[in-house]
Image (cartoon, rainbow, N blue to C red; front, top):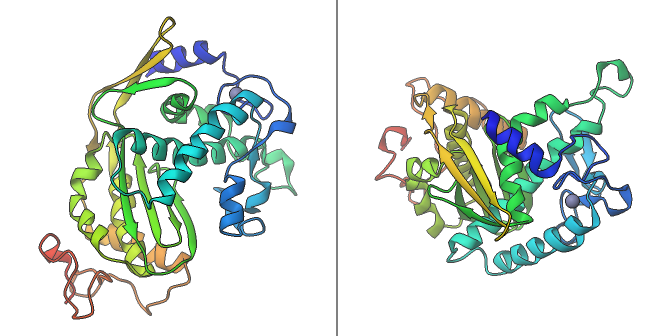
Length: 325
Ligand SMILES: [Zn+2]
């Protein structure tokens, strides 16, 4: 791990603070601040005055969520990535190639990382500045692998197998925009109206296999509680990560190609239904969905919303144990 951090600090002459470009580390002025949630997205879903709750519980309007960004990163690299992402969104993320997945990964990881970067400049408590900032530069270094991956926005990058992410796409019934994340588990989900992406990072594509049955849901339009339940499965899988792989990179100065390799494997704790139930309970609660009790039933089964109009479980063939019907 040390070598990764050393490399990437030398690589960018990185300084983690609130006046350096969040992506390349170059000193920059705030005139070229980058919107963490891009302006086109805020227009499309009318997010400007809506608020995002950050890690210390403060709610900040989306329009104020910006990070320092140099003009080259902003106007060249990020702008091209946004264009690629919009094309994928316009076709509802159908038939994704590896390069498409890389774009989705870059676009979402930028949001997760930049939100944490923003927190470098935000006080934990504005009434009590002595408490310091929401995140320290030392804490931000724990995102060094994610930041390394984000360099793929600036440089042609070869991610050697296995790819360090798992992506799930869910068609949804309603038109609402929705965003939530689980920062310690490094996962997030964004619902662009009738299509949603859920992604987990730094798990070498294992959650994609572990949660493969959820891919069956790509054929069904999910209602909101169903979408949340699918996310609870994925987020909880991310929370089970105990030992994450390490990533090493090399940069060829001649070809300007960055190569990312993985070392080690992912270890995870065992799945515990009671814990999963509390994750789902929390998600439902935080979205104002009240079912009157915990999803954990007295017999130990977990209530599932993933049933069709005939009360048949949508994942019956895979998840019989959790089938509530
Ligand atoms: Zn930059």
